Length: 579
Ligand code: DGT
Ligand code: CA
Ligand code: ZN
Image 1 (tube, rainbow, N blue to C red):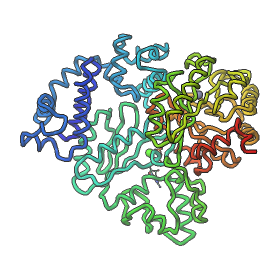
Image 2: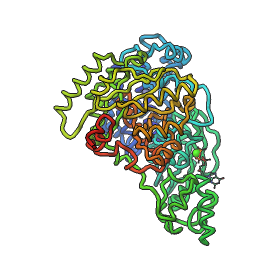
Image 3: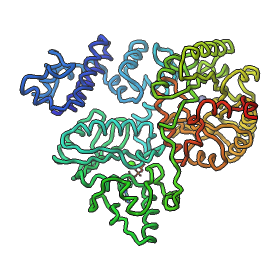
Image 4: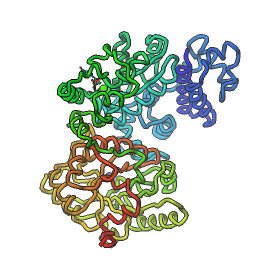
């Protein structure tokens, strides 16, 4: 049994113990040992042969005994007993992304729920958000997760596929004989919805078979669809298809180029190569994965063989990128390093999980210089929208916190509802006092286009509306955009100087890449905002960046790459500063 498999077993023990209500320090010991085993240099089997299991950091007598049994028999009586003691429905819940053992314990304790059906019903009845430590985001994660477990759909959101791809990549890298592991296909290109997860493994030694045998036992794996030679195709419990391809290390780059695609990019390259008298195959891009004959050291090398600059994966969609590259006009795509702050997030004041301070700590840890706190407004009762008193109290707290902070600024913002009749949810005098106003639609989704556009126009023309939040209202795979005329929204944003949001929450990604690219043509500045409801979700910035990069956007196009001074001067409320 490999270290990786041992770590999965310990991880599961930790989760099951936590669900059973075991002491937190004991639970932590299992999780910690699992982490350590996953990246341990030496195989535990060898350590065991020398009687040195307890030399592994975090492994004491008790854990050593359990590991020894796993190594000797391939089984664990302890784990099997735990599996019998915890109702199977609770174990299934562990497969729901965003729902950990601790939350499952809380739900089980308070609501006595033991099946996925009961869990779904409780989430629909908004009972989850009333439990200690859980919020409306967990409720959403449950509704989404239960759906995923029920059906395996054609496409899954990048927000589900990428973390899964990262997990598999990290664990594959720890296996013996593995030289390099990278994701490829639509996940690498940052597509908002993907058909499957493609992972490429370069190996220096050993057979693909031994690697596949381990991965097939991964706890996330529900079924193996196909194994042949160097290709393993499987499906996870969350319904995601994963394709793992194994090649010799020296063929890695050419294979990676092939597997990243897209087919449309390849076609564009083919036309260009033909005109220039090159052959793609000779330059290093094979026509089939099995036909790699050119050994490349980097993708840059391939493009330079075609006399082209490097084309980033997000641009490889056959949207004219080859011609633009040839003319030397490729955009300098925005990156995470360019991002200086996040302009949309929630705290415990409304429906977020953390305090302002905790959100600020997380933003600083990411190297940001500013963070706007933008709670929901009073009409949005389901999301605990702020009363006037609460809003002003929060503003005071922010002023106080800012006095203590060096090199960082908290903006006192608001995500104000655009009411069904087009009015905003607070008076102008209040909005005028805020550092930043995002206006969003959260109700009356079914209005016809005429009503909806009147509503949006009123908001865009409002003197204090700086940013239009999640402009089309679409929820990926769940709800289409409101009935709007996007072109007209763009015209109005350009005319009124309103910033448009690229909402980075992976179930929104709104604006999408097509609209964002169009916005750039209009000269409309964009903000990539996570809309985080807890500190961890500030990480969703990467999904917003994928949209922006696929829209060919540069740092200049994104207001939250700007210095705070420049950003503030650009806001509507501060226009006079510029004059
Ligand atoms: P999807 O549908 O979201 O999984 O999209 P992709 O782009 O990941 O497509 P996939 O998974 O079918 O294949 C991964 C890459 O492998 C694809 O982007 C390009 C390459 N590829 C696969 N099949 C073919 C093919 O028949 N011809 C060519 N030229 N390339 C292919
Ligand atoms: Ca794919
Ligand atoms: Zn919102």
